[in-house]
Figure (spheres, rainbow, N blue to C red):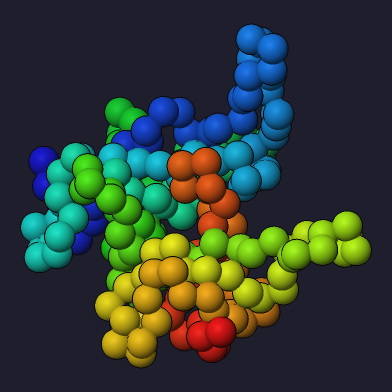
Length: 185
């Protein structure tokens, strides 16, 4: 099976990541489908589109948009799978619905996406919010950033409200676009 335009993926694990372990017991931290923060964002590439000429291949892991595996309620209150759902646990996604891929060696940003690690303020006891505003360190760069002289490890300033929180491994990162990076600090 192969689509001319869409990647076909399956979630790694379940559609939702809403359980944690406390003292050896599974605890559900979110029992509603409305909260996007507990939707799984990890997928495995099952098939690449016929027209695809990039580096992503079958078996790669990808970080996807939070609505890919999300459950919705219809007008009658019945739960429905995402519009991306195909069948048998498989989903169609296009190249703009995933942001990082892992080819078994390392994570790499896709297209114009980049990921920034937030920075903790030095004197956190003085501040209600412990993260520096609109400032971070580039965790995953892209070719467009590199052409502008911005590389992995650079401390940068980014546009207000441009960050979208993702958890990659055990680390919280902000996904944003190249043009959201304002300055190298």
